[in-house]
Length: 348
Image (cartoon, rainbow, N blue to C red; front, side, top):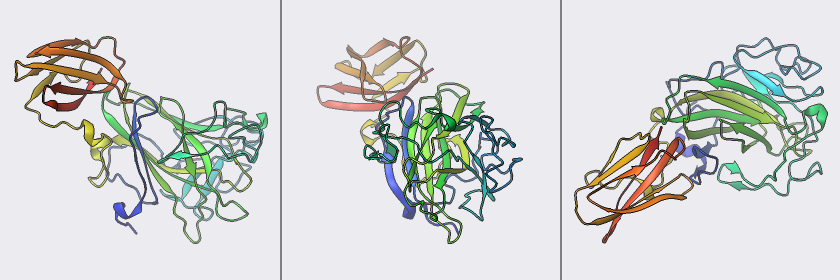
């Protein structure tokens, strides 16, 4: 049964903009979808179209595995090793957020996450929804499970509009809370800007457990992005492996109004009549005009709050943006009274 979205919020927005053009990561303690009736760019995100037999770990979908014998339509499995066992689970084994099937990233029980010692998870810490403290070179596993590559499922999405904000929404769970699997595991998602590490917690079909619904809002830097999920296996003895379902990608404008904006209040536009910024999106130059002849200062900074350009002017100014990488940027206009306008601009 559908429940009110706000009552299920697990952790609030991350607005630290760490990985390149990711604007924020949100996570919700719920199985239900968040975006409804959306223009989805992912095909077979529920993993229903597959030749794999359910709950048969000798029927695996990664070519590197000795037991490779099936596939998932529209998805490519890479990484892993001869001993990997990624397979399809159904809703008799675990929660499935979409349909009756989900992808299980089975990949062994000795994934090293914080050091070369298996079961060492002391480094793990979270900043809102994201795990931020995994050392460089980890997670990793034995070569028979793919080493540092892990088991990955990926799909390339086409037809995106550069400079538009999109949402990658998916459901993540883990092996059932039986047989000792009681703690969250670690997996990664890459939308073209490098791995973002997240948690997958144990889920079971009976009684039904609650998994995690993730929203990753990002600005498209190309007409196509490859979406890639990776799991290295059990990071500790009772830690679960990833079960993935209901993967969708759609414009952020289609999110329900109950989902908060990624843009902090401090950089929202304050008064659209004070200053005109054009063209937006910009390519090689950006023109700023004010309704005052008094000296003004404009500052351009990126999503990490790093200042890229600062200039004093009166009336209007033309800024060279040719050296900026494609992406989303923010501006701040000041005069002798203080900050009078802020906003965002996209570089194409």
